[in-house]
Each structure stands twice: as C-alpha cells, then as structure tokens.
Length: 348
Image 1 (cartoon, rainbow, N blue to C red):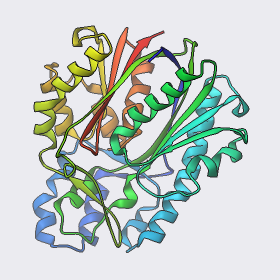
Image 2 (spheres, one colour):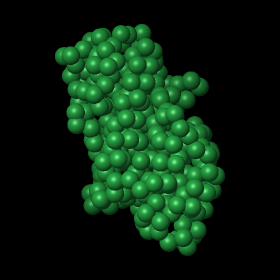
Image 3 (cartoon, rainbow, N blue to C red):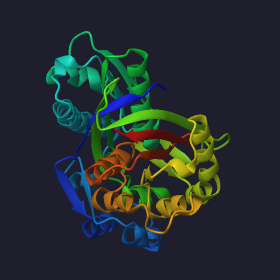
C-alpha cells in the first residue's frame, strides 16, 4: 500500500450510560433463563474490567421483550445520530467541508440498513450526490481496522481523493436476557455502543501515515465468534477458546503480516489492540511477550466504554494520539472468521 495520510480521527458515544453494578442488578432481575445459571456466571460482571458502558436506549428498554423489527428500529435511529456526530467531527477536524469528501466506507454489523447508513446520512451532513459509497457488513470487531484499511486502499488508488471512514456498532441491542446460553450473559456484562470516524488521503501527512495493512484468517474457526440469527434478534457467539487461541496464534499472525509490510516486531513502538475483554488483553500481552500492563489504554477504554466491537480499537488509537504516537504503531483487532486484521501507522 502506498502511504496514505490519516487526517483526522473522531469518536462518538450514545446519550445513555449504565454503571456496571446497575447493569448486573438489572440483568438478574429480568433474566428469563435459569437464575442458578446467571448466579453461577454473574462474576463476569465483576471481573470484566468495566466500570461504565454507553448504550443506545434507556435501561428500561432492555427490560422488555423485543423482536427483530423493534431492535432494528433502535439500531437505525441510533446509527443515524452516531453517524452524523462522528462523521461531522472527523470532517471538521481535518479542516474540510462535507463537499470535499469523495468517498465513504461505512462499517457496521449489529443491524441491517438498506438503504445503507451512508445513503441515509450522507445528504443530511452535506456529502455530495456523486459520493462513492462502500458499505461493509460482517466484519464484527475486526471492522474498525479492516474498514480503515479499505478506505486507505481506495484513497491510494486515486491520489488526491478524500475518503471518510465511519464505523458504528450498537452491540447492546443484541443483549438477550431470554437465553440460557452462557455467551448471552457474558455479552450482557461487556457490550457497549459507540462510533468512530476518520478521514484519509494519499499524499497528505496528517496525524500519521498508514503504511501497510494485512489480514489473517484461520480455517475451520467459524464457530469461535460471530452472530446467530434467531427470531428475537441476533444471538452472540463467543467461544471460551478465544483467549487461549489468541495466546497460541497471535504472535505468528503478527509476524507474518509485518513481514509482508517489510517490518518486524522490533520495529513497532506500540501495539494498539482491540480490547475485546480482560482475558483477551492478557492473552495479547502474553503472546507478544509484552510486560504485563503494557496495554494500559486498552484497559482504560474497556473500563470506560466496554466492548463496542469495531469502533473500540479506534477509541484506543484516539487516546494514543492524545498521549503521543511512537514512530511506528500497529493496530490489531480480531473478528468473526476467525480473523485478525492489522494496520501499520507511521508518525507524521
């Protein structure tokens, strides 16, 4: 990939929030499965490393029973607001006008929008009517890195063009308190909602240069992570094997992708990783032989916002930018497939 400038990065959160202690109490009150199962797994709320999460509906909404239609209505309303907030902030931070944007990549996997989110909101924020649109579905937590890489490749293919990248996930509307699946209880303990947006352009220095990107997908791992489509809505797939899988496989995947970019692990000043959960963060540090606690910003974002899926790693990057980027940073995120997406940033 020819180097592409990251001109801006913005994040946005929905208007409602819930403290973890309140979430635990409410979840037990309305849990429709076996109470003994909930009590056996309730420690996940205490051990998740999360203090507060931001959600797209008042907490009373989650106490009700909702089908696909109602869940997707909440998804669309929330995504429209978050798209406009994040995209507008990214465009303004880049010192541009909406009419300066030539293309948009929009990533989301927690609902269905047809017309797509970019079509619903582009005209509202002032994007041109000849904007090129690339909506992406199905990447899950890897979508923040993969989507930004896709926007960067499109920008590199047409030097001078400016591409807006937006990723929004409303994981909380998939919370299912009617299920006996242990993964549903874990999801209730860790999921939050949020959005991030960025502007990229080839040939501009920006905040940092996107110098490369890669992806690794493992065969026969479709059941490790994802969504099942069920009548009440999406049901999360979380396999207990995720942390040990990451610990065993991550370093080799990173080394292989870095080799493809002409780099090695020793060239990287900071790994910036999707904080899918405390155990995943621990597994990443172990796999990469990082000192315990190295991924401090990841733990901070998890504590403040929970797991928001695709946007989460960009919240980490936003805090890393504020603190000061090292010469080279590698973004990584895992997602359904099972896949690992990575991106190399070089400080401007």
